[in-house]
Image (spheres, rainbow, N blue to C red):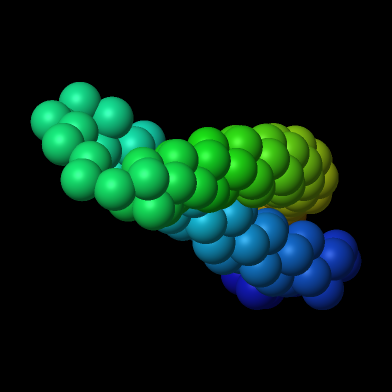
Length: 145
C-alpha cells in the first residue's frame, strides 16, 4: 500500500501556523484587557476609600489637595475606561480573526479528510483487484491441472 500524500499539506501547515499565531495574539489581548480592568478597579477602590473616609481638614490647603487628588483620580478613571474600550475593541478584533483562521483551517482539514477517504477507497479497489486477479490465477492453475 502506498503512503497517503495530501496535495494541500503546505497550505494546511500554513493555516495551522496562522491560527496558532492568532491564538497567541488573542491570549495577549485578553491578558491586556484583564490587566486594564484590574487597573480600573484599583483606581475605583482608591477613590471610594478616599471618598468615604472621615475628612477632618485642618487647613484650606489640605482640602485643596484632597479635591485635586479626587479630580486626578476621576480623570484617571475616565482615561482608564477609554483604555479598556480600546483593549476590548482589540480583543474583539482578535476574536474575529481567530474565528476566521479556525474556519479557514477547518476547510482545508475537511478537504484532507475527503482526500484520505478517497485514497482509502482507491487503495481498497486496488487490493480487491489484486485479490481477484490472484483468485482467477489460482482458479486457472487449478483447472489446468
